[in-house]
Image (cartoon, rainbow, N blue to C red):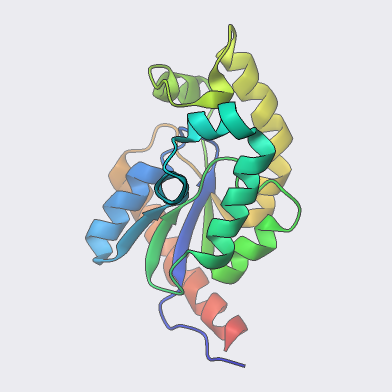
Length: 183
């Protein structure tokens, strides 16, 4: 069995608008690590935006592309990875994510998510008359999978610096456990 990397990836999961990309970029800069966004990897590999993929091929195809990215296109170690909001939901994805590094799930209230995503037109799941209802429904459906992913951090009312400090503490603890479990 190959030895586990000493510097496991940090994978940030959670619903859209919880701060995964913002926090991931700050941590990558602070830790001098590569930042990877799974949605950006999909867009680069397909030449299409997430919204175009949803419109042309549907959600099932997008989820297939997400799995492919996690299985074969993520760095083996040392990266900060922001995962798409629905990535952990399909069967087997939480275990697959955990095999790739330390997973931290970010949570926020539906009100905060709506406020943070309101003016973003590239969110295909929020198109419609009542985006808050869509957010609440999807959050309720996804919560069990998010909770299975890893340690959870609630982002409401916290500054980016407070989030950084919380995730750094979690990573320091969990990366030792992760390396030990793989080695």
